[in-house]
Image (tube, rainbow, N blue to C red; front, side, top):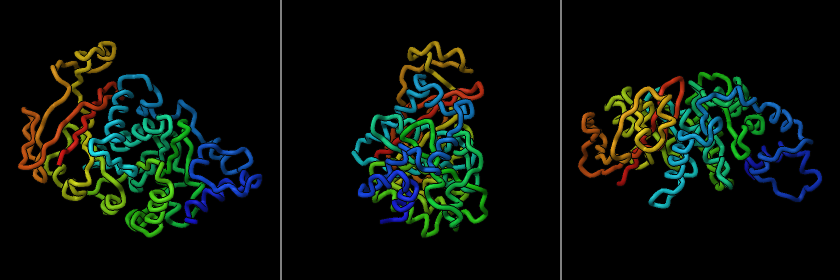
Length: 336
């Protein structure tokens, strides 16, 4: 039995005394028993609703247009045209501060809100961790501590208000992030998750590959990569660079974040338009564009990228609201 299974078995040791013949499943984590001291502690650590970051729109406003658009993103990822579902997805960005953690967290929440889907969100950005803040935790024991052999595996799994969503925070600040993420212990953890718990979705929040060497190693351990870029902030050379680093065959989509030109009023959502800074009208939501890899030369006026062989589509997939700013997400799927 692998290390992960042993860890879960230890976590549920007390509850297993009554029925020792049952094989412990990863799903047991979502049903903690009162007889287990650690699970009691974990339950008590679930942060109150008011401590959760308001940007977690799928929790705070699940019936809003923003949450609905996140669900559209989820659907595109869970039901791809080629039928190949990425169970282990890495979410990263071209630069720090582009919103990858927000996208990863809301996506994880949305998937876990499905009837039967279970999700594990792992913060692998040990340099600039964010997931713990979004879910209202302090710098609790996390992935870095486990990889440093400072704690056992059960202690790093944290509960959330979503029953089928668990998170693993980055843990305490560590200087040797590259060595930890690329260590055999990390590879064993990912391998165990992939092989023994294939019914779970694993979303990995990773540092930008251009700024963190360990992120490049993670791309090879995941099924696909979702890249987040910031509108008006990420240059063509940065987008080209991350495509070269990750490999275009591994990129399942590109999210254009912080797009501040909402046009939802023209789509029948007038009651949401009042709180958005600007309103524009468009005849179509879908924008057909061409993408060039690796050069990605952009012509902003035409909203067009030119290429030799690669065709892509851009669709409005998500919109949210934070600090009086409209945040719009475009998802670009490549058809290669």
